[in-house]
Length: 143
Image 1 (tube, helix red, strand yellow):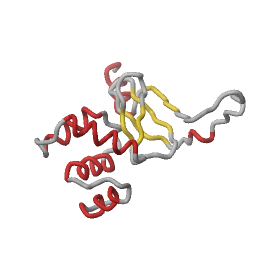
Image 2: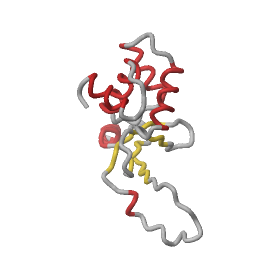
Image 3: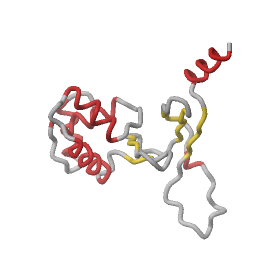
Image 4: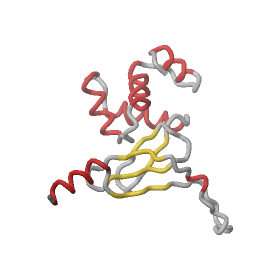
């Protein structure tokens, strides 16, 4: 998606009335694969759109979620992050800076056949450690 019209059509195809705020949120989510929280989205969007409210951000995230445009991910049982990549994939979370990266590891490949008495409805893989930048910074501190 690259234009206002394309984003608007995308929303209309999902029975969502396009508005400038919804289109900006959708564009933000598509262009920023940082797995933002609702607060991060609000802060970033309010820089260019001071009239946007937190309630608008939360309401539109809920709408996008209900229409299958985004998914919620919760890495640490505290803040909910949002991801526009709906296919199952893994994430790497840096324990130092908090950066979240997508990994090309398919969670669907996990064998859950030993859970015969359970109903698995999602598979999530989270790897934690130090990202390249934080690892380099740690090495510099040691020298």
